[in-house]
Length: 324
Ligand code: NAP
Image (cartoon, rainbow, N blue to C red; front, side, top):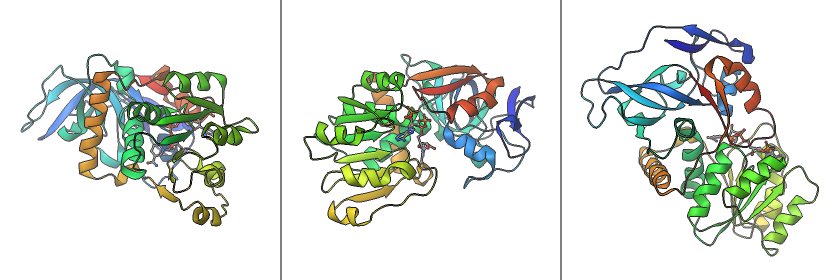
């Protein structure tokens, strides 16, 4: 089968399309014929070699994908050939392996993909939606009636968070850096959309909350925004740091005077119980229509290197998806 292999760590050019042996589903495992693969920012950090998880070389990137079951191993119940599924990682664990025509998953890493959701949409479910669900409900204790700032709402995690929050009865303020991104944020049901590259947008956020500030902030670029978040957050608010790409100076006095909490989120620290609840919430939301993953760009699998460049560029407006 075709698969992307990285034989060394480095720039996007290390990702090459190669022919590799078909994987085989072992005991307790399911093989999925991949129809679409989600490209996540951390795929690029791992490829560069500086990420907390460093796979053995050569490796195939990718933990997010959707497709059809095409082989079921011994001792697996509940799955049959032809089932539409999305996956949350593969048996390769740290080395991942979804940038390929097929991937083998543990049975627990395979989840039903409702018929109304396309494979391209299904490729952006695991990392973005589980992260968003855990940030809102596992970390920030978000509740109906809260006001939420999604600081970076035009990307995959921000769109997922906006959809979950709107469905749960929160008032959502989302930010984006382009008009196209702002339109995507509004389309997800956010009541306010502001441009994080415009002067004065923090004042717009404060005034949209009647001067009180957002109760919950989900932060996609903490190295730029954490001190600003501490300025605008409501008294007793909760800030969840999801994305960060460098160091930041903050005035810790604001944490005190705002009587607020700053949480970190590492998707990989999720508990098995949270995993179960998150996927139940995702599948229920997909079925009801409350959740609708937005595909920003589709590219052939062979263009994985180009996708790694694109996912790090500004101007997000949904998920970047590779098609094997
Ligand atoms: P993405 O699709 O590339 O989206 C990135 C978002 O950040 C876009 O909305 C982008 O908006 C926005 N952004 C850019 N500059 C910003 C600024 N100055 N202020 C606020 N937002 C800004 O990425 P993603 O998949 O949603 O992931 C978002 C971040 O979370 C990434 O850094 C990723 O690595 C991280 N993440 C962490 C975990 C975890 O376990 N902690 C899990 C998943 C993702 P524009 O492009 O419109 O400017």
